[in-house]
Length: 179
Image (tube, rainbow, N blue to C red; front, side, top):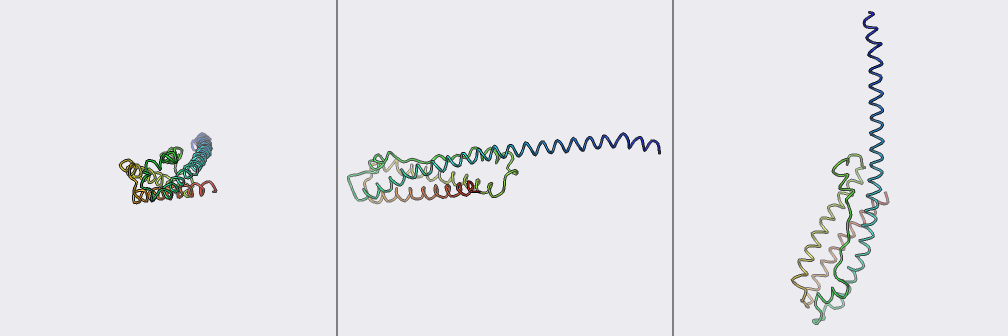
């Protein structure tokens, strides 16, 4: 009986000490996770704001190119190259998602599902935009000297498709920023 009492007197403080240490460690880890999420969320918001601005700025040039294509659509003396030179070429927005990629490979479970889902969609749309842009370039280079209505119309349709993808990205960005 005396041995059991002595054993409890020695073990109980140790167990309490271990439990307190675990509680402090968990509290500290949660605090670090909150700080990390706050920093990464701020970085994501900044990148998304810059991306939205880039989309808006580049869309102006793209719409100008579409208007110029419409204007010179039937003019057989003006080539695709001439049209692109009139509007300073084709410009694509910069889609920044580096902070998202950083958290998606480490502590994604700390973020809200709706934000994770939308950011994953933005990443997919970025990849789609990259493919569409590459297809656009693959179309333009062999056709720079073309003056026909058909090629000008095809270029316009490809640009409209790219603008559609950019608009989808912009809407997704606005959804995240509003929330």
